[in-house]
Length: 308
Ligand SMILES: NC(=O)c1ccc[n+]([C@@H]2O[C@H](COP(=O)([O-])OP(=O)(O)OC[C@H]3O[C@@H](n4cnc5c(N)ncnc54)[C@H](O)[C@@H]3O)[C@@H](O)[C@H]2O)c1
Ligand SMILES: O=C(O)C(=O)C[C@]1(C(=O)O)C=C[C@@H](O)C=C1
Image 1: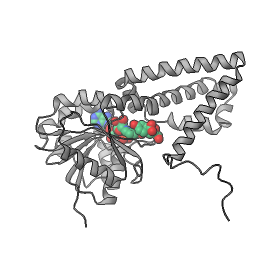
Image 2 (image 1 turned 180 degrees about the vertical axis):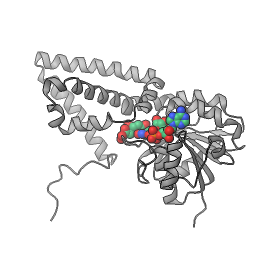
Image 3 (image 1 turned 60 degrees about the vertical axis):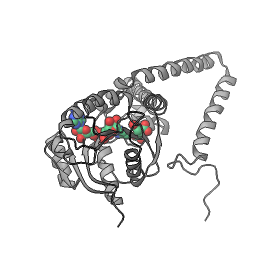
Image 4 (image 1 turned 90 degrees about the vertical axis):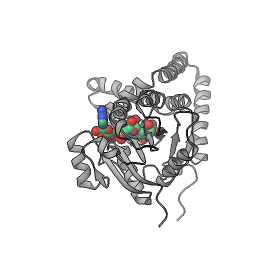
């Protein structure tokens, strides 16, 4: 058996992301012992029942005691309060990380509470589903997905970064490093604004439900169904994402609105060339993603019928 990457790892918050990490850590035999803590007694009870974590603790401080790595897996808006709670119990030399969808505000909220003798190395796995809670996780969630590591300071210990990188690679992810502000802008484009658009589209359909006698639901086409999946994501998590990535999200939504007005105008004035050129450009982006092998879920369209 290969050497474990960490001795003890503590997961604080036992939802989709933490539980998927735990199952992947067990699959790879990456850690000697994983402790866990969740705020609600029901979640701790469920975790014990399904064997999530080697030991489920009654307090966050008990879970992080002697841990070599602590990962905060709570909504972005709760990170600071959790850091304040666990700070006095952290082991000297430990690494503190998180999985939050926003990075700058987490760094600002957590850093002030951490003692000087720990390494703070935030991270963000770019994988998820619309489900949440301790029973929603599965070991394969991170396979072949990106995990972005965002060291809190430029002088973060390179050995501590390599160790965290090795854990995420063992979990199945491809790892990249990024600066926090750049991360937040990129994610505003690729994840945060698209979620807000999906929430809005499903809200509009719901407003129209009475007018269309529920037909939007009955005849929902694939595009709208994808929107409803995304719009079913956890309200607490997404409220916190938008409140904590305000500037970047507003910047992207501003650009989105400008483009939407241009397309609206093209429809009104019958400017088919504008629409055609625009859709040609966006189609090329989708094809580029598939050619780069970055959409593992994409069906093998356009390559002829399956061979008998
Ligand atoms: N779901 C996704 O698609 C996804 C993907 C990548 C990263 N993330 C990030 O991962 C983190 C966890 O998301 P998740 O999907 O696992 O959520 P989840 O709702 O499944 O689990 C969150 C856990 O945090 C606990 N919690 C909530 N508020 C708390 C508080 N104030 N103090 C202590 N514990 C609290 C909950 O009880 C639960 O155990 C979030 O920061 C989210 O932004 C989510
Ligand atoms: O597949 C989904 O359900 C997701 O929305 C996952 C998703 C995303 O791709 O936008 C959502 C939030 C994250 O922080 C990372 C991943």
